[in-house]
Amino acid sequence: MHVLIAMLLLFNWTGHATHFELDFYGLSYHLVGEGYPEAPRKLDDKAAWVFSPGIGLTVDFREQPTQSGLAPLAMTGYFQDCDDRPFFFVGGGGRYRHELSPNWLFDLNVGLVYSYAQDWFNDTFYGVLILIGNIGFSTPFLGRWWTYRLTYAPENVGISATSGGDLLFMNLSMAL
Image (cartoon, rainbow, N blue to C red; front, side, top):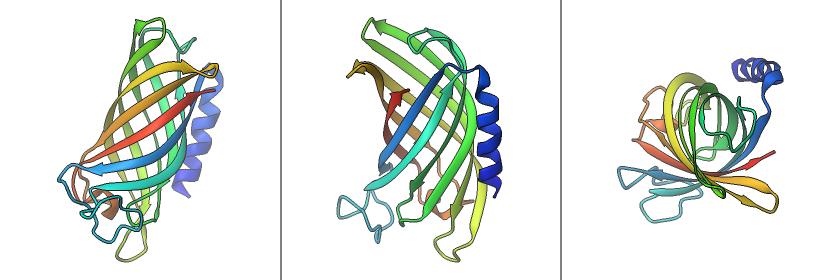
C-alpha cells in the first residue's frame, strides 16, 4: 500500500517533466562473489550472477534528454529479487549529465529510494530506505536514446533481498 501511494504521488509530481525513461531490469551481481545459493534464476554455480527481471520509470526534470548539467530525478520500479519475490521501490535524487559527443552521453546519478520487498523467511513485506548510485552511457538507437546503466546498492539488513552483501544491478533504459 505504501508503494502504491508513493507511486501515485510521483506521477502527480511529473507535470513539469519533459524527459521520461522506461527502465528494463534484468541482471544483478553480488559483489562478494556469491549470492543466495538457491536462487531460481542464478546464472553461475555460486549465484553471484542472477537474472532479476523487472520494469520501471524514471523522470528526468530537464527540457531535453541531451541537455548537460544537473537535474532532479524521480524513479519507481519493480523487479523479481534473487529468491523470485517482488521488490518495489520509489524515490528521488539527482543526475549529472555530460555530453561526450553528439551521439554519446554520460550520467552520474545518486538517489534515495524507499524499497518494499517480501522477506524470504517469514513472507512479510518490509520497507527500508536505500541510498543508490549509478553511472550510465547513452546513445541513440532506432530513433530513441538508450542507456546502459550500472547501479550500486549497498548491503542493507532491513530486507532479506539486500542483506547478503553489496549488489550491482544492470539495466537498459529507453527515452520515451
